Image (tube, rainbow, N blue to C red; front, side):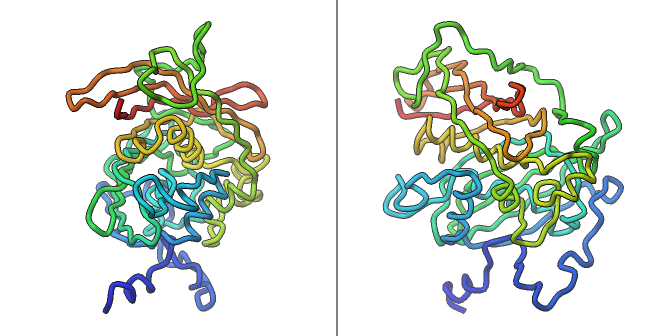
Length: 337
């Protein structure tokens, strides 16, 4: 079989929704996503997908991020690339290869991503992951997944470590970080701080990124959360949301991570795709249509042995409706400056 013939058999998603023409229950034979059904360790994949034009454009729609690198030509040559967080939700959702996605009423509490290389248009990507740890805290069952996406040449694209409450009542818990941060993020902006769009050789501690303002709609949230694969959850279906004591669907934590990815690319440029990292804690739910602002504050600037400069930040997302933060975290990237 030729390489092109092999690729033609791959779909752009974890599951192929075209199966619905002949299959009644697309999740038949999968486990109920409850804490008691966990196997630790439990492996998922490997599974391969194609990063095609539709996948890139669909992600741009869900994030409202139309950077020309994704739609015209990238900064690493003429090839278009995917948004830095393009494959993040695929990694988060690997568990649905063994668990019923439409029965999942969980809460993503923490996300770490390491950005090693850009993904190219038309590339075959292989993903695999595993549940590596589980524990109970404050009456909630948590599980930790570690996963990775690699390109067809074997290079690492992104790595993921996520913490999830496997089944809960989202409207009742209101968002919980997986632990107490050793470095609290207050979201306070220093008096007389300098506002910057880009991180460069002049960047100094105390500089604050110009806010990235977003409003995530119900349509964007549903598409991001796999409505195209007929998955029903608190992000894609209002009835499921209300059964979870939510008035309307909420934006997936991983979708907010993608918004943070956009802010980081704006700040660090192409360097983010090869040396970026963030750790985010989702501390309060975000309803669809609720405007937010994302920003960050530079906390360290250090010259590295290889001549590059490592810049560290505190980052956060704040709701416009009540000024409450929905996400707090930390980020870093090495720049050639």
